Length: 128
Image (cartoon, rainbow, N blue to C red):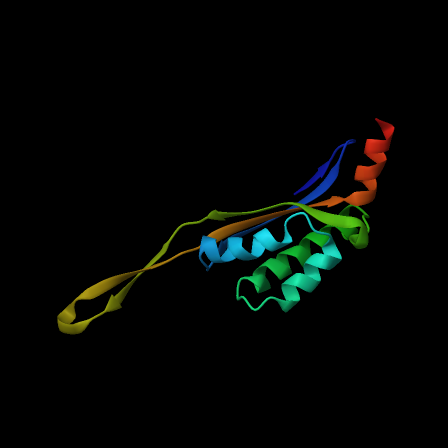
């Protein structure tokens, strides 16, 4: 989703039903919130966590949307908002001895990232 308004131009990207715990994804998201696009890519590529790969793909997608749809420069963008919310549980049954079954609940999460343009932000502040 792209919000075009005079005060701020931002690109919002949402990934739903990512199969990982909310807490594991938040550990990575907390490291990149408020950082520039290039710094975020360096951090995510070097992090040893499994949660960093889907978040890296999401940041790439947000930057591609910003440059293609709005004509923004990727180097001037930063992550203004990044959040992880809980999704539904994937419920399965695991067969056990004597015909019984145990439930398996697999956690999912929804990841939202919002990119803003630094140059537009500084221009708006200077007009005030």
